[in-house]
Length: 105
Image (cartoon, rainbow, N blue to C red):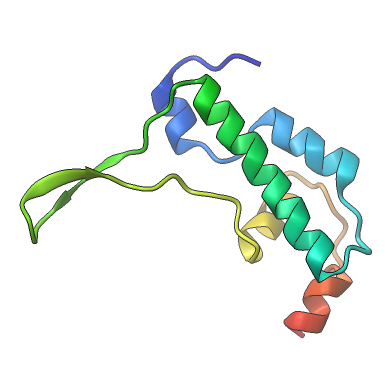
């Protein structure tokens, strides 16, 4: 898929390719290690999209050194951010995956 500008690619986290990957590969019975591998696979897709789109991270001004610097790209986190996306795009049912219930009851 082609995206219009590198600026859009730099600031966006969720793309159709990633949502499709979630729909096809997510398993509610993932254990913790499977879950971490799954998140890493989403970040690989995100990195590929950004590289193909020649994206650059946002700039910020540092008041300490009075210079502009590139920030870091956001990533899919192992924590709640992924699950917010599941609910936002209605990818999962209501229940929490067992791997998170064990870690964060």
